[in-house]
Length: 595
Image (tube, rainbow, N blue to C red; front, side, top):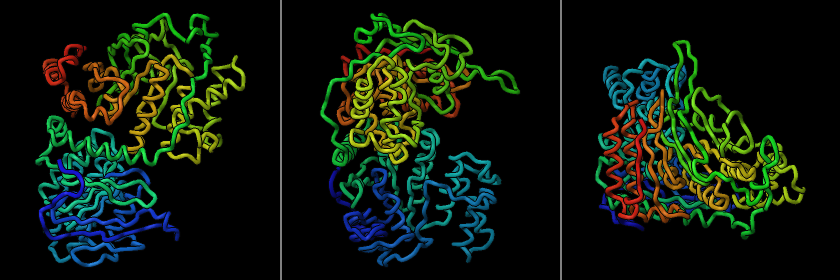
């Protein structure tokens, strides 16, 4: 791995940024981008990673000629860019398809504009070639409304390639897609880029996406006055396999270096948390009665093992074709204070299991038992954090948390309740923003309020349903740290649904891997024997971490496309990890398979 300014083989620059600055006000200190310099060579794939709001879309718009710099120049093959041109194809996060045209029509519209001198047959062949290349031959006559989000984005990619530009500019084209669809399109983009040998610039907030695709990864520093920072060369041959790369020293070292650099940038912009102070000593009430004195004494339960039990849990939905068992025979036992993550493909029933545990979805069969009592309906002893925190926009962050605190601490004084709210808002980094209106907070800050509100209820069980799924990767890292810090202080029993492999390992004592639905069940349970407290940077340096990561990726691959892998295959995947981890971890690790 090389870090810093890489030594590239001399070649003709295709695209250059020379001292480019861009702002949307007349104040230089408020510029979005400042003194950006970049040289991209013929056939190079460059990925630029950065924080939300750092100016990534402004950067791609400058390269596309959609906006002009305030200072400096954008140069294509030696000539300054002043407007958009067909030699620079762009794919944005939104698809921008013509809704009244078919897949073929949307791509043909672009081809007809740039290939007017070609015959009708040549243009038709070009359209069909790129439709086939992105795997949409079966949907060529469908209109956008009949396509999934992933299929629409494939049309956008095919359209951009079909214009046969010299440079392809990709502005977070896959960030709005689910994990499985995103992985499939990453693989297709990698394959196409190797076939076409295009010069590509990818804007992304996903480090793994950058490493899977790019020759060079460049960090964009935080705004205002963002600029291109440290560069990293990816010395891994193509094609790259996302699971197998976890055995590659270059991948491990480069990934750790990029992560450390981004974390350092994040730390430099983060708010300084208020000094530690002891948590308020107020015990919440039970939904039906006050907590018994034995529980009031430090809020402990007499049950420590099998504190939470999912027993033969089943969920059936009636359909016109008959009953559909989404989840069937889900079994899991958790001790008090344990943190479990649920991972699996979209539609495997992860959120269904969580909603039954929350009492928000009726149980069709089996049971959920928490602290010796059957879960029958919703209650404040089970706090839930969803992708969207669902705050009252007309209330401040403080008042949003106080709504719940006032319900579960009726015996506490006003000062005690205020202490609870202030403590948890401070712990999630909102000491200076707790009296701002919820509507004025960023998505990440709103989710911090949701986390604070959940912990402030002092629940027996915390249920997290992809709580960071709508956030960019770097904001997600920050909130994962927030979550781990508050959880370490409270040790509340927690179940977290996620599609993020790194998140699953970082947070959990156990990762529960679910089979595909319908009739989804527990596939494997992986004990995570990595030391706590954990930090992302420390895990990057722990060799066992990549063994766990490879197992989860291979597990997801085994179930891809609705497959139902054998127990022997799942055992073989788990055995690879057990053989690879350190001897002490291997001695204590155990993977179970539930049929």
